[in-house]
Length: 57
Image (cartoon, rainbow, N blue to C red; front, side):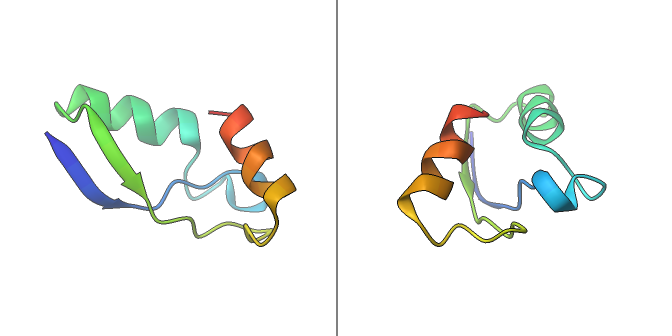
């Protein structure tokens, strides 16, 4: 199953959710894939920020 709209957060919004928790919960619910709709602080507005996010998953 695919969840096409999830908000995975970390960094300055880790109290709302984290990548680890969101992906673990999705897997437990039977989702094998998710489409992250990044709602992050700081925002993903540079290649470096996106690379950092991918490295932390």
